[in-house]
Amino acid sequence: MSETFGFIGLGNMGEPIAANLLRAGYALRVYNRTASKAAALAAMGVTVVQGPEVQSTNGTFYGTTSAGGGVRLCGEGGEISCGTVFSFGTGLGAFVATQPAMGAAGTSITILGNNLTGTTSVTFNGTLAAFQVKSKSWITATVPAGATTGTVQVVTPGGTLSSNVPFTVD
Image (cartoon, rainbow, N blue to C red; front, side, top):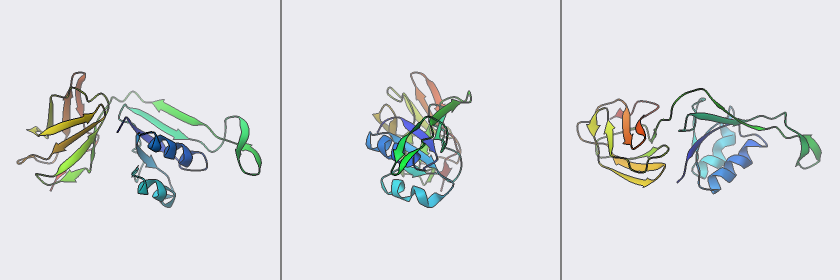
């Protein structure tokens, strides 16, 4: 697994770009206002979100437009406006995302983020957890006994990253 990207829009341009990013090894969180258009990507392992929480774990938002950009041959039948890929930062810091966002003590979960190599601790609302760094953007952790619902924190050489949503302990 590699860096996690958020992706908005799975139209004529967005879906193939998202599929190519997935095939290149990137983890994706996607949003499309017509949820059924995300089904094929979901079957390939993409996380489909129900709202605009498609921020990358580096703090940047990504998406596509259906218009704009240069006029090119983007599909069958001639020249059409291809749209463009965009990103924007809002000044939000990096964070980690848990998959799933709930579980009982003893459950193994995935934590996605950036620059996770060298992580020294993972806590669930302050309770230390056993964990294993799988790559620079992927950790597995076990929900510890005694953990309560709250923030998951990952301490890395670059600082402490907190989960973007509270982790719910069943």
